[in-house]
Image (cartoon, rainbow, N blue to C red):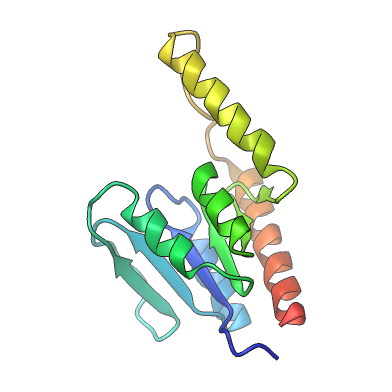
Length: 154
């Protein structure tokens, strides 16, 4: 059994599934670190740690990436943070339930760059599809599966 504690690290800015994370983490007895650049509410209890970092660019991402390891499950929609955490051995899941993997991250980064170029040229208007019930359900399932897998690998 690993001496490194299993923990969920959450890129909290604009994360639409914080309540779901708290519920699943509580059911599995896994601690959660909710990381952001400003103060925010978290449930009171020993399993949830609110981490407020400086407002410098990428401070929350840096905090998460520096602590990510094979016993971490990182929740983020940030593709570049996902890449950093995957390189550290972490399991990474988007709030939509989509897992980021070492085999999929390259194409995700390339698509991100293409979309940024298109937006800069005015060729793309709008953003991602609205977050829905199916995304929430997919996320809950993905987080539960990831926790079970990382616990077993422990």
